[in-house]
Amino acid sequence: MSKAIAAPGRTLLNPGDHTLILIDHQSQMAFATKSIDTTLLRNNAGLVAHAAKIFGVSTILTTVAEKSFSGPMFSEIKRAFPDADVIDRTSMNTWEDPRIADRVNQIGKGRIVLGGLWTSVCIVGPALSAIDQGFEVYVIADACGDISVEAHDRAMDRMVQAGARPMTSLQYLLELQRDWARTATYDAVTGLAKELGGAYGLGITYAKTMFGGGEGGH
Image (cartoon, rainbow, N blue to C red):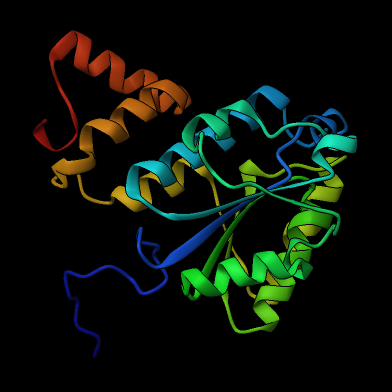
């Protein structure tokens, strides 16, 4: 008979057990993205980036043909990591760039979390490659996008069938926090949620303004 223990499940993420790789959130890639509204995509990418910043998550930022074709990375991400060394590639599959492999190996985490454009190319490539090499892979579905809903959905299906774990941007933020008694990050997390957390953020603003309320009695 199973016995309940007050402990998190093994597959839940924590800030120190994974590397976040944000891939090709760039102007030219966004122009053709139709599976998600571009404003929402930018919001979600910013939410993920700032969540990683709050919790000190090991993060790799990468672009493709930034100066010659695809344009700069979203400002929402750059604001979170203004001094980041962004790796600009020619390869569509991020995992095939030796500089990415070197960075992943230097960080030394067994879990990879991915978000970027497009899902069916620039996310499928590294996801399947990392899984083949023994990494656990998570994909933040709403921080990704593709040229059609069909393209995005089939790409997510393919990755899940290979063993990747799908999640969302707000889920990522709250999974890293996971307990409102963790006061060191409470204000930053609720502040980020109010700014980029959509209806949930509005709810926090309302509760604090009208009743002085907050999660966990804060």
